[in-house]
Amino acid sequence: MCSKRKYLAFTVMLMFTISFVALSCRKEFEKINTNPYQPTDTMLNYNNLKVGVFFPQLAKAVITIGTPAEDTGPVNNYQIAIDLGVNNWAGYTAARSEKFNGGNNLTTYFFNDGWVNGTYNRRTADIFNPWLSIKQATGTSAPHLFAIAQIMKIAAYHQSTDMFGPMPYKNVGSGSFTVAYDSQQEIYNSFFAELTEAVNVLRPFAAGDPLIPQYDVVYEGNVKKWIQFANSLMLRLAIRLSYADPAMARKFAEQAVADPGGLITDVADAAKMRAGAGESFMNPLETLWKGYKDSRAGASIAVYLKGYKDPRLPKYIQATTINGVQDYYGVRTGVAITSPEYEQFSSPNVLSETPLYWLMASEVSFLRAEGALRGWAMGGTADRFYNEGIQKSFQENAVNNSAYAEDAVSNPASYIDPLSAGRNAPSPTTVTIKWDNADGFERKLERIITQKWIALFPNGPEAWAEYRRTGYPKLIPITLNRSAGVISSATGVKRMVYPLAEYTLNGNNVRTAVQSLLGQPDNGASKVWWDKKP
Image 1: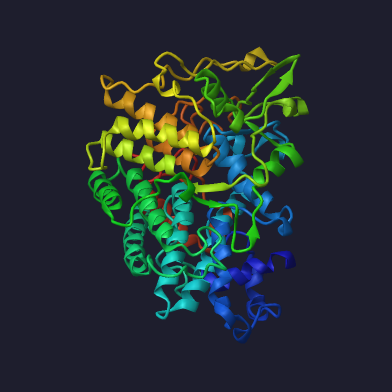
Image 2 (image 1 turned 30 degrees about the vertical axis):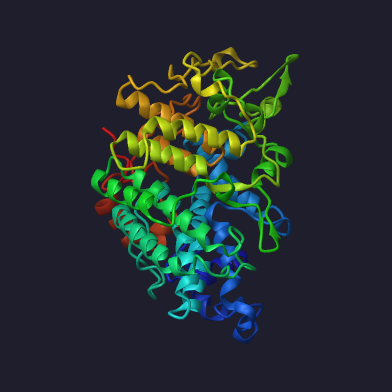
């Protein structure tokens, strides 16, 4: 129990319940609310430290990452909250065995509450704690610094609501231990308003000196790049609503493209975590495939890259030799084995120094391609942005193949398991690479999303969201589904469930959220608000 006290301190700061807190901890609230190891205001006021120190904390919560000094804590958090869940569900990675909880875990569509708790905590407290600290420290005196915090908060928290659906948002930090949930529609409305305001606040600073470069681990205080990121993020969120609210989607997509601050169009301007403000960050995937030997390349990403003869294949996946044959071997999600035989399959080609990307130039091109396909004002045609997205992804991965985008023949490969023919699977689709203006809307959309999915690797949260929204790319289905018939093996997990601790400590609000806002059972088959494709 004592090891969980730090989460109660977070709860006090946030004023709403988070997952790992137990009821009995409340009795000791007054005792532990004052941290003897926390710097005083006098100490923090020096050189913007009072506000600056929280910016790296918030950045590390967008997609969980840590520094070498933090050892394996962030790695373990990333594994539970991302790699064994959304990365699997997006077709990017797979566990090399079902060793976790006897196979009853997220990779097999079983929601172990401990893992759900951990994921919920990563997606709430880890985000709001530093954000609230920045909000309180800046007040009305430094709105330009708070604007950057707003952008980072939205970059992080849109993943939270995309994962769970309705979530606490507007009243976080209101002074109550139990906080009402907001609908996902309300949260997205707030996102657009906050991004618009953040860009307007930052605009006058774009030509000036960098803002707190010693604490900005993403852009080192470059305001122009923060504005580009904010506009690109708005474009991403607008496209997300294409089926739920087409009018709103178009409005904010066109606003993002038209803003004079611009979008991320240069591959060097990607929002990412690697090194900055004197810190170096450690991509957690290397420890997962190399140290823990848990994560392996997913079957879906492998067959697409192999079938398309994609030059990004060796950049994404490591070749390995099985039965004397060197190849790129992916693992199907939910493999029903307990032995380590799949340890020899291909691993993601991700090292500790590999940047962890939030949003890249290639994604912006594919977003504009889809917007143009829908008839929106994106500044160009769908085919132009589609081909541009491919080329920018090649630049991002330092590869080149001028003939790739002209390939009208290659399809994703069939999946062949060298250890068990019973796990083989046919090619998931017949879609080819070359753009064809004669194709219908759906075929063009599948082509755009498929290439965007390849370019996003290994950004599982974004890829999983787009898969749910569009149904693309077509993935190789799970082999072992332990959802007791609740979740379809064909379409996969639609959302994460709420943790049991929320029902215990914030019961009235979470039940209202399920009944009135989600409007469906609290299970993995229920759809989030924007998942409205007919």
